[in-house]
Length: 376
Image (cartoon, rainbow, N blue to C red; front, side, top):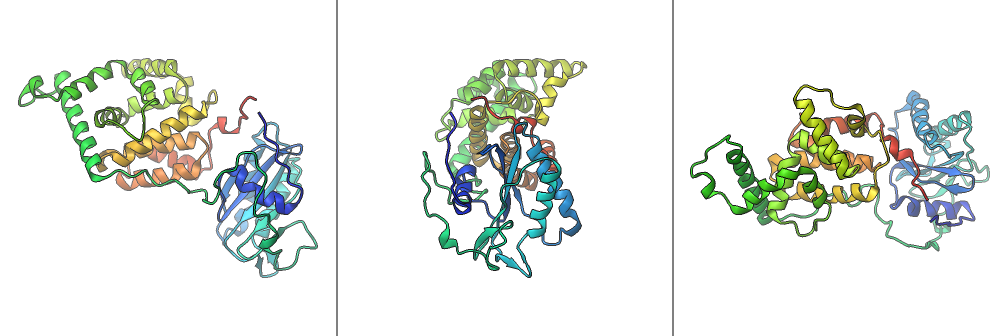
């Protein structure tokens, strides 16, 4: 179902953008693509540094190139959100960037209906010759909009990025469970006889090892767990898997697809370890290519892995953070992904997946499915 919200004036549209995005951008430029007279999403980018200068044309080309990946986009409206003053010398703040974006949009055949700026001391349109030099008063912006499903948009693009709270007692329980599971795996697999053998193992650790007999089922069941009330041995079992790149990649493939995709990825991993080539169609999922995942599955997996990252011992947290970073990136949430990669790389500067996701973000690379519109 499509929700239609009419914005009669530039002030109405400016007030509408946070509701389209789900938050109020700060120090950002938001590009709102259009199909005809209807918006089809919001793309947010950090504002370039003040000394970007000659780089602005390249930056504008990158931004508009992403809009052009939306097959049904035929227009775009850039909106600057800044903590700076509206007037910068003899120009509206970030005017050079906006004009570069308009030039690139024109060259690509995208109609630019307006270009707006919301600054600390006023707002206005870059295309309005009658805009006051210091902008229009922010008091002109509507305080409320008649939106069908109002939501809190007071936070910015980083709102909610901090990990959920986990107290020291929870961390100790989960850490103890993880150690017990690792010990049980070593004994069951014959890697270690242990001081007392199987008889001294925690029964919950033995049950955890048994659940590893069907890895895809474990990953599928995990999407149904209550992230607010994770049992320590459930958390430890999933941590044990996600700390191992081969199993983590199976989890990501499955959460981006379904349990069949998990079975296929696990079998491909076994064959690869025996010397066979890894199938391209499975490998490309990690780079954001393939069928569009169900956002709900990715969101559940993201909430779960963020909870694991919060409860994990420090030496296990990097893997959880990196997994959460990929899931956030797969959802098109680069700000979230960057926060998680930064935390992961603080713990382990050489973490492979964290480095890969960080390079995606640095290159402005989003998964191809982020540009596909969901079916009505």
